[in-house]
Length: 328
Image 1 (cartoon, helix red, strand yellow):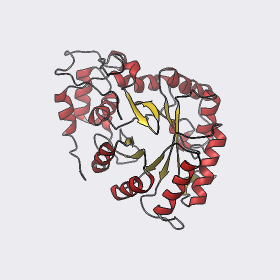
Image 2 (spheres, one colour):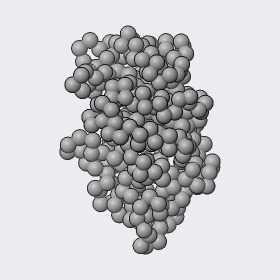
Image 3 (cartoon, helix red, strand yellow):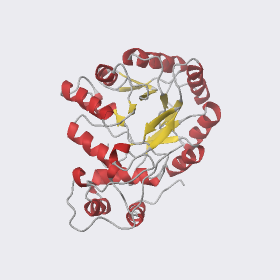
């Protein structure tokens, strides 16, 4: 359950407020009166995680393949994130492959007791960087065990079963995959089961069969087709972790930072458009957990500063109206 939430101001920032992460208005939460609260906490499989976490996907090289452009900076980013209070890190063995997990271990091992490391299974990479499905019970068990070895831990806070948008040859039935996830939870390899890239029907099945604690789907202020899944998660006390929250991940995908309404709100509150896009998500529903990723220290600080962005009710309403939800 969420123990803190964004406060909505009745007014906006004064006209002419300087733009940038260093000048954002400070919100208040039940846990902290400053951005150090990282937007409050949420229960994730028994871990009390801050709602602003860190995604490790951007740490490897281009195309999420190979070593980072700057190894020392990648290590510094991870250490700074945790120093700032981040205690939810999202990763995967197929980021690199192996690279993200190896960097996390180098930077942060031995881990703080409250650090929730969440991974995902259901895919692998070949030597050319192609994404290959790995969706049998044996595959996902082997890949969880590889995550554990690489990270140097005995249990992951949660693991997301990453599905394909369309079934692929050799893919096991969802019932069997969820059964394998439950077995790993019972065996103590993972504290919680999650699911990713899933339809509402699949999430319902995962709730009933595996008592999932987290869902990771594509969602953002410009792309609200997954609203029904978000509402389902919120009603069941399940964390909802949006990926591609700012859009622009693929050609033709609209970018939040280029939207005129987002830009206008950003100018009003003295934040960047990206910060407004993320702050809207935190304000939209208490079950939302963010995992913005970066390989830059400056960009990391900008992401962390989202905890201090305050949106008025009027501003939230304008952002809501950009792309009314579908599937709700």
